[in-house]
Length: 507
Image 1: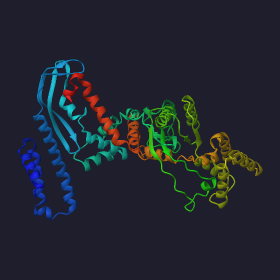
Image 2: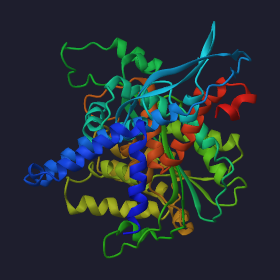
Image 3: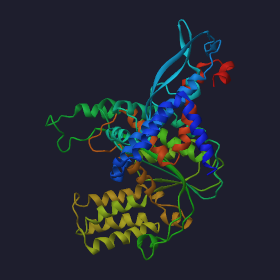
Image 4: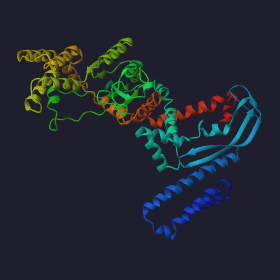
């Protein structure tokens, strides 16, 4: 009983505050209904729905009461000096502005300090860290999270259903772009966070296309798209869907322990022989459709340098063998005098082997599977050149036509071309990873699952912002980023407007 006394006293004191009268009336009405005979006849789901709606309204009134309470205690000042050095000496009191929140819309009333011919200053806006538009921090955060998971149309519906707020589709798109503005600056603040570990440092990149509006395609793609002739006006025919995408470069940097295996363990991989893989830690993934592939690869190297500035650890770079990607990586390693083992993904090698095997065997037979396994084992043993020569000889001995042996020659050329990156026997002995599963998964998650929604076409700024928000969330950095973003918003929207001598007074 004694514990309830302070609560009752606090409630009675709240009743005396004029700013909170509306909130207390809403609370009492809510309690009266819940205790009524009509409510006791309702299903619990109906009560939940009532509480969500009436509860949001109660919270909105409480927030309004708090803002009104602060407004009554804002003391007029003799003047406020801006960053422009101009003193605003005229104080206009009780100037309202709307604020859309997760509970509903409220009104912020505050003092404005003015000087003819100059912009007004609102110290209360700085204290509350209000945004330049009408949307609250809670709504902005909710829009960023929800839109990164599903379409903007679904985001609008989700906000309306789960909160007391409302954000139209166009404004949601604008809020996401604004929310991502501090992406680069946030990760630059971590430049001195060296990792204390001797585990492998893995860097991996890949690219994925995003369907864009024509005006946001890269110039060469845009020119190719302009030359295309379409058979139908209402839809694209088969073969006419090229030149609609802009490539996004995806990168990931992570830490993992060495994991030694044998070629035989890789080939006969099944439940009976599988060994639990070591876990990946400190994984950061990101992507950009705006910046060039070379820029993203450079960022990946800089992220690795941040973690291991003295290169005390083994560095592994995993790629899929795409020529321009490999050239950019080698150029960046050379430019920064970095030592790393570059490995071409073994899964891509297997895909070439399967295509070559179809030149010799029928599909879905035991022979074709055994042939691929046998050549795969030899490649894992470091004999890729021998495998290439062997399949060429067999194609010649069997008299395969040039057209039928095309996949064989393609595979053999691939093995010859990338032989310096296919030394799997050495990689396995050292415990290095040889597959790009992490980056393949990142491509699916960052791009396909959201930006690859059927029918979606993106503007460049929206696509880039969405990639940044999804990258931050996927890397587990969203909460830290949002705090960083709010501090920067305060500087941009408020403290940068005041003279340094007035910052503490205005804050």
